[in-house]
Image (cartoon, rainbow, N blue to C red):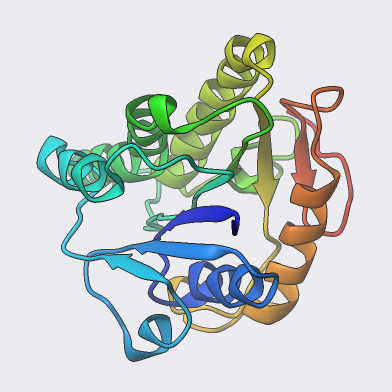
Length: 221
């Protein structure tokens, strides 16, 4: 029986490359997205499309489609990056980033707890921009705050789920050449996915709740 990986935001970028990676590893990949891509259709065992992870209806659709199936790996990857500068703050944009980047992964993980089991792993795709200690350039108020919140949520999830035998990782993919950053990154989505998969492979109950760069560096909070 194949292992099952559920990946949100799987239709493009890092999510798509993670879907490709785990499909090659023999996982039955369930890609969750707002709109399916042809590339995802080529690798996913199942696609749950039309899902907005910030809305309860979308999460309910996920639960219904999974129909109690056990999940070996849950990757909360869906995210949003916007740019705010002091003096030009857009609080609606900041709220939207909090909804997508922080609240949605927490809600998705809680909703799928019945599908997780001892030995399951949860990966939260965060960012080193969520590190308070590492912030030496300011700006990006919504993105930084939402990823810092996600880190806090992830640490609590790790502590709460450890007794259940479920490990949680907070993972920074690197500065990746995706649409989110207008393809101006330093590494390819393929390289990011390889690094993220390596960190997930190393995830266990001893290092659960850690904040890692995809290259293996332990990041400061």
